Length: 241
Image 1 (cartoon, rainbow, N blue to C red):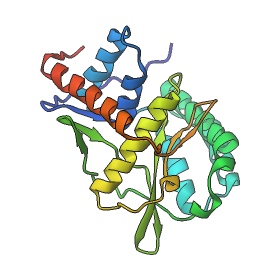
Image 2 (cartoon, rainbow, N blue to C red):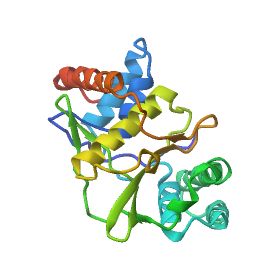
Image 3 (cartoon, one colour):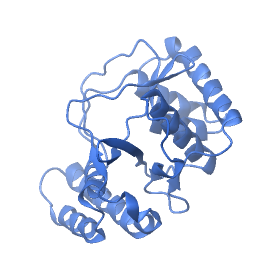
Image 4 (tube, helix red, strand yellow):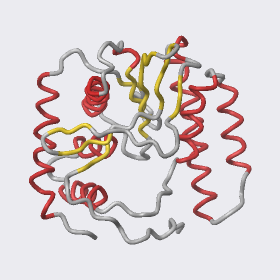
């Protein structure tokens, strides 16, 4: 069994906060999955100090691919380099293999569905620059797009990557995530972005990978607000593992 590096003692977030990706997972779980929902909230309230995690190489490679112009061969080469690198711990080697698998899935299934006009418009977030959160029903939702698309000095789109193995987004969760990406963009003053350029990509979803904001938003936004209100009510009682 391959174990990941042990986390340092967790921080405690006194106020409710959750990432967009974890919120999408939470929404997708049935009401009977109380244990898994509790784990998501525990991870959100007590995030480990250890910053590493699965798919970091994949997230960096795919984000930079948007910046570099969208040549699929760059993805093939990146995945090959990761698989050939057998240095480090067993966990590190397997992590590179997981990232290679994600990059290959993106290259094979997602690339051809993307609008070619967005290639080369991307910029990744600068190190040390933190995005503002989006507050929904007293919960701070960390949307944190992976890529911002620019034409000249003007923002024209956003890309958010969802990299979670064995938990593909349902259509509804993907639509909710894309809607929150749109709401976050509006909060930041980017109110005229084309919905086709507000993209959530579920990289490892073998069925549907691309999500953009839905046309019908009232009921979906209500569901997000109800879910966040539920999280806020539970927050004080959530204990660490």
